[in-house]
Amino acid sequence: GDSVTQMEGPVTLSEEAFLTINCTYTATGYPSLFWYVQYPGEGLQLLLKATKADDKGSNKGFEATYRKETTSFHLEKGSVQVSDSAVYFCAQTYSSASKIIFGSGTRLSIRP
Amino acid sequence: NAGVMQNPRHLVRRRGQEARLRCSPMKGHSHVYWYRQLPEEGLKFMVYLQKENIIDESGMPKERFSAEFPKEGPSILRIQQVVRGDSAAYFCASSPENSGNTIYFGEGSWLTVV
Image (cartoon, rainbow over all chains, first blue to last red; front, side, top):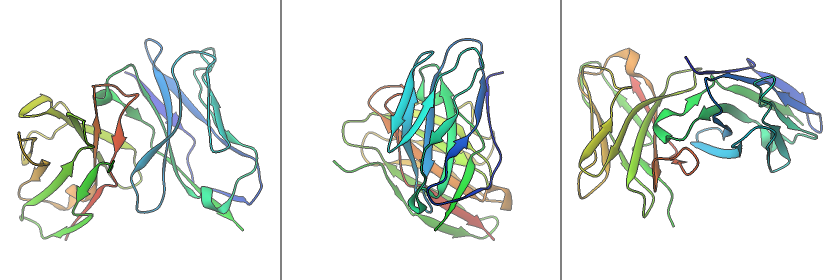
């Protein structure tokens, strides 16, 4: 069945380091892809999304490109900040909000 | 425009008690979803409701769990006779339509069963 696999955490980086969090998906078609962020004690917030192949989603310095050929949607940021410490979830859905499939999350910690 | 409001934020129940979690969707949103997040896991879909109707409950455990979204008032997720395995974060989300592109999540309710 459809699924989302993302790199296991925790990931610990120093401030201003380059970030990559890998995400791959399996799907029978071409779903929309999302990255959500969950700060400590809070709910999920949509970080960025891409709805078709080769689309690039971006927000707050984060980017991810929908790669159909590698079924990937890796999250990147050129220079992380302490405030980026959170859990990041990759997700997919064809359309329905009731069928969003989430990855297991990657905890990111940034050292000052 | 207030976001999706959930309460309580934290709830502690003893085994065998009942837990009730409430969710008020964003203004103008008639679609409500409940997701569960077990420790160190991603969110899993539980149930999708519209006013007075359960549309999809394919993710709900067969026993002890129920959900409603009455004509007036918040949506309620009810867990009867809680067990330790019910300890999790329960997230409510709402959208103006059944679309993954327009869904907004609440801050979650953390249930601890002792």
